[in-house]
Image (cartoon, rainbow, N blue to C red; front, side):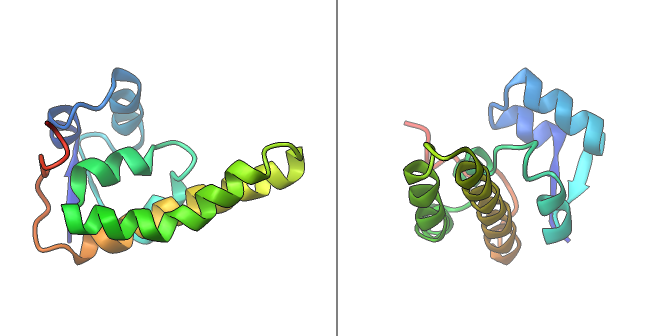
Length: 116
């Protein structure tokens, strides 16, 4: 079972709003599962989490999987209903992909490869 903790989020630079939401939903720690990721897909920024909690290789894979949903979302912003459907597809893809790659990684600690 892999977890993400409030402390890890804070260490990774999460904003005060996301920390407060994490505390509200999970208190101090959460076991990462696909169901949990999908349940909060519209609350938390999984791309932010992917940049901080996935390895460089994992983030590259995440980006390539999520990219088609992001492109479709950007192209449909004019039509409100299509925009909503594509947004839901995008955040679902982000949540599922983050969870799959995070759980498959050997390490569960915060990686610092993205910080210069």
